[in-house]
Length: 282
Image (cartoon, rainbow, N blue to C red):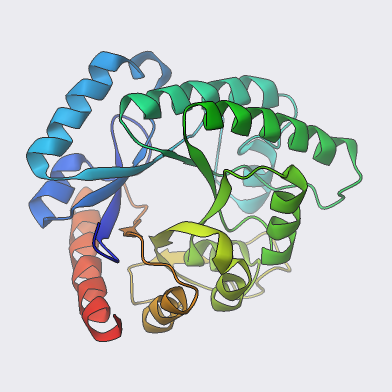
């Protein structure tokens, strides 16, 4: 695959990603995909989706898991409901991620991704140790499918994410770097974070955001904006990706599924921006 192929976050039948026809119409050659609902994680569904991808000249690079009951209404709700961290749903969701891994294998893709949730800050706590145990078991299953898992950034500082990955101690755990999430959650300067974790970055999102008034000191979100209109700094972001040796797909994520027309427009503008920067930087 050529370096820095343009990508987009898409969906089969779930999540906030664009429909596949948008990627096809815009000539975007790679997609990350939000896993479909449980009832449609079948070989027939995989074959149908792969057929659509082949006809559009599109390659699936990662399948992201998500769960019923997750809510990103605000930061506190996100911490309470998202990923494998909530203990009441941890085992059920881990089992579902194994099913998603199996579906990903049907798509011929070697990568799954997810938000694991707000990793407990106390590395000696029972909740942290339980999260380590379930993550190791999940990664072992994923490994048997010949896959790796990418944790998306944002809910932890770069340092704590590195601590967690070190403590999990599995060779198939890597990072999907989303610079806008660092801003949205107020967990650190995205460029500084990328420099710290770059050796583990195997996929990225190209998404932009503006800082909240008191980032990191309140439960108030930053705000997502169209690529190039926020505080990430796309030129510096791509130059930093190059400096850490990342040459994989540049996957555009624009989470405004309520406004499909604007979403499509913003993705087209983002693709043009990334193509220009790629030509200048590589």
